[in-house]
Length: 215
Image (cartoon, rainbow, N blue to C red):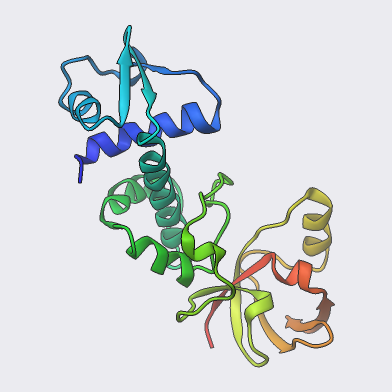
């Protein structure tokens, strides 16, 4: 275990170096010095290297930083989709919440949420071991439409379309976050009721519509 502030530094380094392809992040940018307790801790644990005022993730530090980012973005997804939190408080609360999502707990939450690929802001959620398993073994709160059982109902939480064309196809049917739907059948296509209308979609689209199950 490391200090919460140290985890936040790892998170920032991952976003800047791994996702945004920066070579390093300066202490000045992070408003830190070489004497900062968090910096000393990360260097001592060999999670980062410090050279000429710049921090880089080590081979051991990158997966640690990746896990912090994963927990933060899962926390944002949980707070948004399950607890209906919105706005700036989501990010602030997720910053606190991520520190208690220890390894194992984060995978349970990931299963509950249907293994989301992006956070509410569209940033990619790094995969966990649970994401590579087939299906969802635990009780679900959020589920892709493709895994609902006929008769199950819910409210659309979000859409994970692979491209803009698919997103437009889905939205053209009126499938929007906040709308309530019920699955009527799942063979040969996924037939669901939305308002007073019924729609049939293939599995590709059904996998991209995530529903908060209510019944």
